[in-house]
Image (cartoon, rainbow, N blue to C red):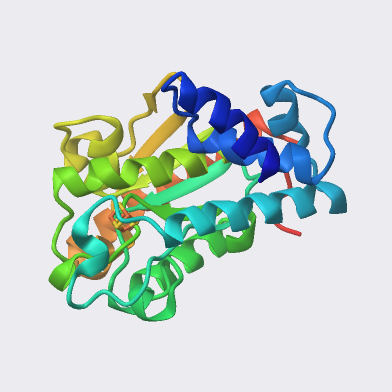
Length: 254
Ligand code: SF4
């Protein structure tokens, strides 16, 4: 923390605020005695699947979580049915990130994302596509459960975007699967998930594939259920193929 404090002190005098991602990378540099000062080189070195990089990724994950633990950027942490914040989970070096809406009852209780029925379905889809859940990163747009699972408000999404941006700036994924309307609208405002799913959104940094949220699949029946399942299957395939094409060396199953 010494380096962070020292630089922050100098910048505070000039009223400049360091982004969280820079702060924790400075700490990583100090903690692991990294001589390289190029942020991109440091982030690229974190992608390597070896023990040293794993230690660094674990350190960064702890730092991301620490920042989340003290987050009070919106009032959701005070909501009546809120138990705990639910951080993202998985491989910080994965080229593929999945983003849902927010924690539900089970996630709030357990403190892990996508662990309820919808989460189990998500794991099944990934496994059928030979993707180990632990080898991708799974997170949500907001990290606290809204009262009665209501849709998060725009101001809450905006407030929590700093937490999501911190995760994304460290992971630097190539491909994102946006699960449902809330993450879709985060990346492409005023979009309909029904009309937009299955179509690539190419933001400057990522390829984004919008698809239906697993909870939506669970609410369908009969013919509609088959149609929705097929659509999601196709969308996941497109996203995974793109991630594999862009990072052929990454092992999605170990
Ligand atoms: S929802 Fe996000 S911004 Fe709001 S308190 Fe929870 S972690 Fe912070």
